[in-house]
Image (cartoon, rainbow, N blue to C red; front, side, top):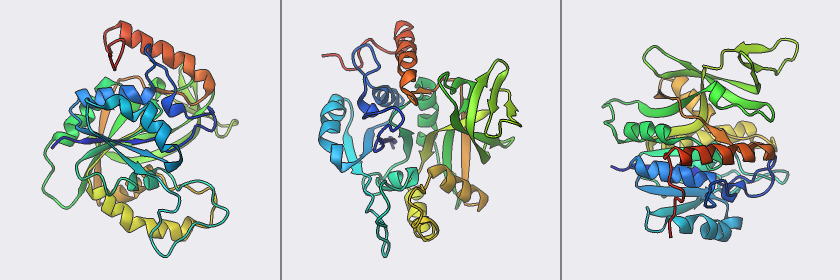
Length: 304
């Protein structure tokens, strides 16, 4: 069965400004997510599902979805702040949807096959999609566990030169499965690797070779049942907090620690990059140009 690519594209870039999901970075006007779809397609993914908001559906379909006609099927699902299980309703002070787990949950009625979930504004690289595609197309062990995967990037290949970043530092077992994730929110590059400067008086020194999660996940449709099961309990504890978000790594971590899921960490030396800050864009444009010059990508992903 061909896996599906689920692209989380409902967020607006608050720090970057504007709808950065459609901002051109390639030599022929390609957006970052165009490279993800291209890489997924050549890794054997058979469909793409975009998770977007209804208010920019028309512009997104015009500027993004229309490009893929003839390449692979495209479907849409909508992250809606009001998409809650009964009896919950949106508090009056709530202004934004409920996070990445809520966004993935929005695809529950259109995805019936193994799938990868990615951020729309991150560049993941060809090797990452090839490894995740091979995992999703592989046999599923005949047991009662949920079998998921996560692509693990080297920390030093994910840092920005324009400010601190947040990353999930992964703990990996000897068998290559994820045992935990430590969130670090003030990571900066240093000459010897990296430091987490959440406490400036006592920075955490890192080598830069640690594996980190960049939210490139591989799931089976059984995830949707787990999300439906867990969402009411999360809402009971968090619905009254206007800025609380239900993140997919938190859900995965809970399932691991409950003994209900295993997550294979698929190491890659692909360079991750994204436009976290507006100042990051020239670097992204330059890196993609280098990949095109090296023959990794054609000069135009969508030739006329």
